[in-house]
Amino acid sequence: MDGSPQQAVLTPRASPPGEAPIIEVLSAEKTFGNGTRALAPVQLAIEKGEFVSLIGPSGCGKSTLLKLIANLIEPTDGKLSWWRGDFSRVGEPGRRLAFVFQEPTLMPWARVERNVRLPLDFERIDTATANARVAKALEQVDLLKSARSYPRQLSGGMKMRVSIARAMVTEPDLLLMDEPFGALDEFTRNRLDEDLLRLSWERGLTTVFVTHSIYEAVFLSSRIVVMASNPGRVFTQFTVDEPYPRDDKFRESDRFGVLCRELSTILTEASMASRKPI
Amino acid sequence: MSQSATLPTSSATAKPVAARRVLIDQPWFWQVMAPLIVGVLVLALWQAACRVFEVPVYLFPAPTDIAEALVDGWASLIHALWSTLRITFQAFVLAVVLGTLTAFLFVQSKFIEMALLPYAVLLQVTPIVAVAPLLIILVKNTQVALTLCATVVAIFPIISNTTIGLRTVDPGLLSYFRMNKVGRSETLLRLRVPSALPFFMAGLRISVGLALIGAVVAEFVAGTGGRSAGLAYEILQSGFQLDIPRMFAALLLITVTGVLLFGLMVGLQQMLLGHWHESALEREH
Image 1: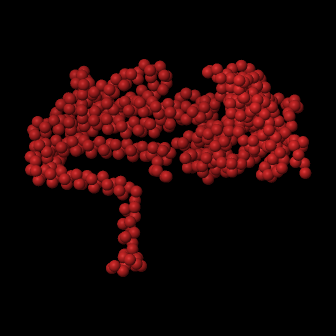
Image 2: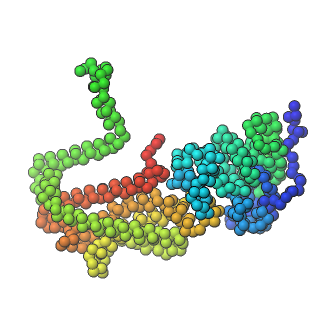
């Protein structure tokens, strides 16, 4: 058997990008108003079709980095580019971005179908087209039966599915997710991970995914960006050489265990490097 | 008979027992029955005390005296009630419209709220009995003056609740709207207004009672009689004439009206929020 750590599949990423990256983070840094340095200058390029996970100890700026990529906040210095342009062109066909929050962030007064339709209502898409797309998105997350329910009638996992459907209905090219399944139990989380992977694989999505979970990062990612704190920075990056589509077999394989152990070791190093200087 | 009670084999005797059980087991049954029993007991005690101690009717009338007065003076009392209700209704609508508009104004900018809120509070804390004479002198039309008085009393809960409601928006949803580059007015309509609805409804519940109180107090101060005399005038007149049962009858009408108006608002709240908001949901746990 080739289960020895020498057979490492977490390989350092060195190869130069092939085509123009979708996202480039060019020495972007962020210092908050109260003087907290959330992110030291970061260099990062994300290419089409990649599934990139950001992982690291709390306070490492992984959420800050994701929010910079979503343009929810602006960098204090440095810059970012989206499809080799600035943010103003994001939203045009081929440059669509969707964000899924830590919480489902649904409108409690609206039925599931209206929650999912919201981004289409923003775009003034006619009702017939919109409804067809909503039905398709709900089918993809297996929630067609709950279309007429209110969010409070759904479980945590189902609410998160609605939130994903609301992202998918916009037919995004880039999907940004901020610890979307952090509050769910492990069983539900595994199922959602599989569904997410299937969706993003089928659609050729580019995904940036913030997580706390080693298993989740290994299972989902084509690349893992490990971050460290004080100040928040990229510690190291690895590619996960396991072909897609992945399923339960991968999760149960020896290789998965090896990968998780390795990532765990690296994370320990990252948190050692995150200690505050005395 | 005793056999069928211990061994309910015959369906004819078993069914009524089951039906009675179901009625008593209903959660609302005691919710209705308990206060009803207290009410009946108090009325009975009141009636008995008046009769036993032979309390003169001009000091403290028995419930039957009040009922009699209510039936005897029904036409004029209902006319007065109608007049008071009209003032209440006008004031309530005015309070809702002006209060909501003020709240919208407040949430547009912190500066506007800072500048105007103290005056809204001033309006709230000044006793209406003190302001009413001034308003009645300043405004020529008494009906308008009365409506304004009641509006002043009823408007504050609307302003304050709606303002808080419009500000209490899920920050995640607000981020979502911002990320989608949604404009200010659309955010107001799609996000802030529905978020504010539960707070607004709570404001309505308080405000409708205050509008009635405001109307009655203003009528007291104005002391206007004539064709458009309200219930307060009935109470004043009955007091002068020592027609105490009639005074109680008018008071009873005001109370019942207040309760009904409150119930109406609860019903409206149930209708608008029943399907999603915790404040209007049945307890499930």
